[in-house]
Amino acid sequence: MSKIKDTEYLFLSTYIRARENSLLGAKRLEQMADAADFDEAAKVLTECGFPDLSGASDARLEEAFSARRAAFLAEFEKLCPEKQIVTACRLRYDYHNAKVLVKGEGGAGDIRRLLSGCGRVPPETLLEAFSQDAWQDVPPAMAEAIREARTTLARTANPQLADMGLDKAYFAELLAMAESLSTDFYTGYVRLSIDIANLRSAVRCIRGHMDEGLLRTAVIPGGNVSPESVCRSYADGVEDIFHDRALAQCAQLGAQAVEGAPLAGFEQACDNVLTEYLTGAKAVSFGPAVAVAYLASLEAEITAARMLLQGKRGGLSPEALRERLRVSYV
Image: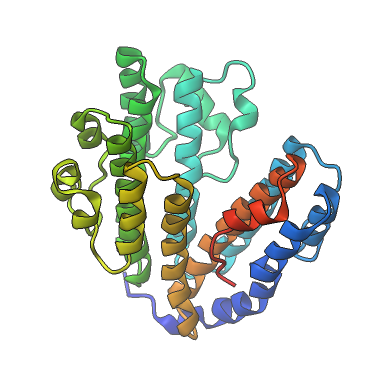
């Protein structure tokens, strides 16, 4: 297969630059935080192409977010020279669905409403595969991970251990897809994401005085920091292990969290590192990095909008909401 050239992304990159103004962005996020109530905050979203969500229930909000995500992914699949970029974005919803099914034992009760339609595998197909133990319509790596997670949960009755196995499978698939693309930008993003996931696991395990064996089970291969180094966090401390410039502040806040400081600042710093990595695509006129950054920023936009609207519904002050905001891509 011939290598995709950056020039093949000229149309998509131009299209994305024009569409970036439709993302929430820092200014609109602050408007939502400062809004008098839920309805006023929801109206800000209409400027970005959302329907009017005034008075919407939580279920209605999720429907709107899912519809926006699905529309963007479908659109990008038509326009993107490398379909694997969109497929890689869909992976997270496949593995979200896998976790829902494993912990919900195949679709009982309200499980169906928790499933996302944005993955590679339609929810109905996944439900049937799970209930019939017939996996021919599910990607092999994912099918094997689900079977193993189901066995782990049955053996240990510990959903956390089942999730850890699915997380490892997710990142293994994601990294393989990223490495198949014409850009190293996505590979760098995935490796940094793995580092962040491992740092979070180390901080939570040490802070919670959990057995070191749990961290060894949780640690995900493929990051810039080796699994062996991550496991030394118990002895050496997270600051000594995660000392790379991009992770230094996160590790410092993680070390403070281990000693009892609130986790909120640490979690916020971790999310910001990933967004700051994505901003590197702004220096690129055209190419796959532009598409990767835009799709990732779309998910961050939805996460921020959900947090702000739920905060407004819960009566949180503008100051409290602003403190929870992450760095915005635009």
